[in-house]
Amino acid sequence: MKTLHFDCFAGISGDMTLGGLVDLGVDPERLCRELDKLGIPGWKLSFHRDERGGITGTHGVVDVEGQTNHIAHEHEHHSHHHEQEQVQDHPHEHNRSSDHHHNTWKEIRSLIRNSGIAEGAKKRALAIFQRIAEAEAQVHGAAEEDIGFHEVGALDSIIDIVGTAICLDLLKPDRITCGEIELGGGTVACAHGVLPVPAPATLVLVRGLPVKTGGFNKEMTTPTGAAILAASVDAFVRTSSFTEIKTGYGIGARKMEKPNVLRVSWREEQAASALEEPWQTEELVIIEANIDDMTGEALGFLMERLFEAGALDVTFTPCVMKKSRPGTIVSVLGSPEKLSNLRRTMFQYSATIGFREIPTRRLSLSRKESSITSDFGEVRQKTVFWGEKPLRTKTEYEDRSRIACEQGISLEDAERLLGNRGETAAEKPVWKK
Image (cartoon, rainbow, N blue to C red):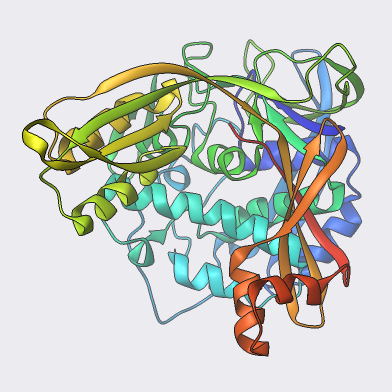
């Protein structure tokens, strides 16, 4: 299995990611031609060889005419993103002008959707921006649609994020992995004053991911870098069995005592052998509570909040409780990293005053998502694998339902109608974390 791995021993930022992926093999001229399809004038993306701590790699630089950009003139919002204000002491990325236009999430989304870049790259770019919008909304108590961006709305950062999405779409890895992420330390200056590292938005974006701090006394992982990982990585691994194929380095702008670089590599993960099980094993936790004083609507609301808090699965089982009262067993499956959020959600949104926690082990096969173009439009599918061998494929319910309604047929007939038509348009591997 061809795996793209991010080694963030010195953190990650947007320009380091672009530099690393180009160093790994993406054609910079092709990347720029694809970025031209955004239809935004006034920028230039260049790459040059550089060195940090004895490690040679590629440094990506976005030059913006006049250091301003205007996607839309009619809307300006105050952003809560901090990166742009860090002009004098930014960890990795190119200098940002403090007078960049404040683009809203709605404007950026429309720009990407209406551009001519490939559909796979569009989806990746939108997923990265969506993560940032969600984080900013959570930090500042605002609706996602109302979020405006300083740094992320700036033209050079749009190039960083969309450029990264294009690179990943061109490389087409079977799987994307990442190790522990260095966040840095110290403080960072922003529009709202001096904040401790990691910045609030970064902390939200890396929630549930393996991170460490203190390796550097500067901010090393920016919100842009954190969002790229959160939206793109299929599995965060501490140990793995693989063969290293090729390594690239993205060079950060700051010169430090330690190498300020992002390492990305192609790895060939070793297939499951006859002596190895073709599934992954995870140590998880089940939270359970017996509840007899919540309505069906309240239980449904609780389920939604639990999934938002990071639950892997939520089930309701009817039961008979003391005094012969009908009740519901609420069972929540989660990872140890999400336990704090899940506990808080159970106490805040359910009627229980206590619950059980049961350590459990989950075994799961790998899955791969794909989208095909058919006579009935784009259709999404999931394929389950036994090691590297495809086991079964199923079309997503929403697409089968749509086609069944349009054609006036059953779900089963819609599946048979699709058959093997269409060509694979985009594939993204999905591994449960």
